[in-house]
Length: 208
Image (cartoon, rainbow, N blue to C red; front, side, top):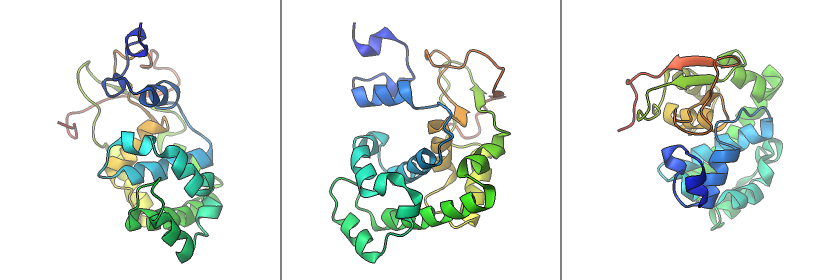
């Protein structure tokens, strides 16, 4: 029996890529409260813009090395020479705007930590500390963005973040478990309402 037939997974993780399966089973949708991990996922989701998540996932180890294991204090200090070196690094997506935004986002990230005590506290305050459990019919895909991601995106942009459009932020919220979007027939789908806020998904921003 192959890994893909042992358990029923979300459609996007039902292929044969073992890294995709591991990411789905061990990370995606699980609540994250570690600031460095939150920063990592925010930068990686921004790097994905216009690309596939598979591309970024398979470059993740390279990103960790290139971006000081996603220590926001170190990334915030990347100067012009460091950014130029990243543009020559074939292990990451060599896009000047994305590289520059990682540095300025690190600086904005540190400011939030200073104001709120932690980025974790800032982020989870949007959902009163409890993950949103989306309630949608089987076969209905997750939304591309929601009112929640719209609000967070707007606030982050106001604080100077870039590559944080609502669609990117919704993917980020899914990744770090602020939203649990495992499909109803996935073995990781939430089984209980207690401990999370269940919201019925609407058709307003559904991806085709």
